[in-house]
Length: 98
Image 1 (spheres, one colour):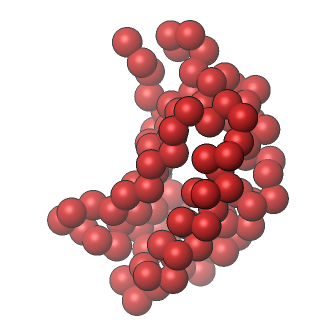
Image 2 (tube, rainbow, N blue to C red; image 1 turned 180 degrees about the vertical axis):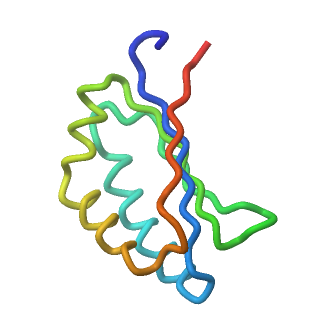
């Protein structure tokens, strides 16, 4: 990885009837994540052609920072909250900056 950054692209396919409440919880969690030291960006979007698919794009300054992020209670709580609201497991891609 160039300069050690961790860049993630995550897709969550949410049950259609749950998308609005999941997005509300995601926005709250996003506001906390953006305050983390070492989080350069955390963008919360949905797919234009599939509005029940949430797409996250995030950049962390290092692997250590990313691992610390994953251990935060609000991150763990968000994933626990999603448990019965998803149609499939989240799809996580790790990207490399060039």
